[in-house]
Image 1 (tube, rainbow, N blue to C red):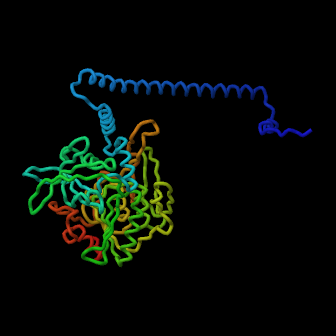
Image 2 (cartoon, one colour; image 1 turned 90 degrees about the vertical axis):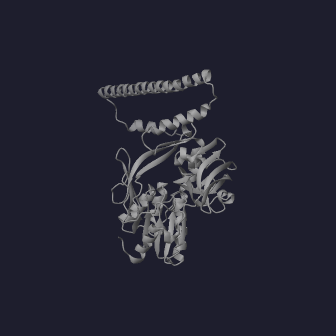
Image 3 (cartoon, rainbow, N blue to C red; image 1 turned 120 degrees about the vertical axis):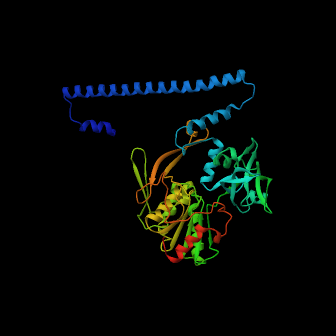
Length: 448
């Protein structure tokens, strides 16, 4: 007869010593104790869940009552979905943190596209400004960049145009009446849809309003550009407008071209750069540092820290462009740098400026930066059955020196104001006092 293989449990039981009556009593007591604890946990969880359900029902009841009143007595028709969307937005805005934001489904999709260097829009970059028309001051969106071959360029929009109103399918919005983010969001939409811009343009020393209709398209953002200075052939100017997932690749491409052209001094222009993705700026910083040098430290509300250093970082999926390979670490050390910053240089852009400052890699020129040293995490609401997403401040971050700049900003080594009556996007090199001072500092080697 073939002996049947014994199970692992049978083998274990053979190796276990025999139990005494006292050990049986202890074992049964332990089982009862564990059962009691589990029962208590389940009861507590059940009570908490019932309280949550009751609270949730109470909040939902408020909206149902208000909706019933509107259905019964309101003279005007209303869009309930839009009202609910705005209610959620106001709820999140009331958190007290200006960087915690709710996005509806369309906004969330556009945000994710922009983060990856893609979005649907008209192909312009804008900054908030003020203009005067018929002796009346107006808040405007000033066009600082028109992408080549973009819908905006094809429609005739020019750098320096000042947008005073935006007309979409929902109606006309005056830029003067909304925030910068709200006005900018109106420029985006579905591919193939149209937006009409009321633009203030100066022609022959006279300002007048014109209407420009533009069809939105799917676009690829170029967050990095490089050029040789018009007045000094040994100086290259690397402008970084944001840190999206394609910025590290753009940085390498433009830096390699500048260095191949004979440039040995680099001005990194971070003016009006509002920041972007943390992985993106960490990868960019690693190209200027020695291996193992600290780039930043993040800290959450519980004091838990994470240190980012200049080491190989291999990413896959959508973050693959942020990969930092061994051969790229410190690739651009050995050259002289000047960093341009202003009051609109924020978040990740401030971090890069701080890295250069803390390791004495370059001189900072301009005005004090914005002062945002916090990390926001983006969460989709799809896993819980809702549309859209939410951005929440989850951590603070600190540059290599360890001193945060949130709320205080970064002071430049060389303070230079930009003329209030000129627009950064419209001046030539010699008319830009901040750029000229940066070039002078690079050529002379003076930091003050």
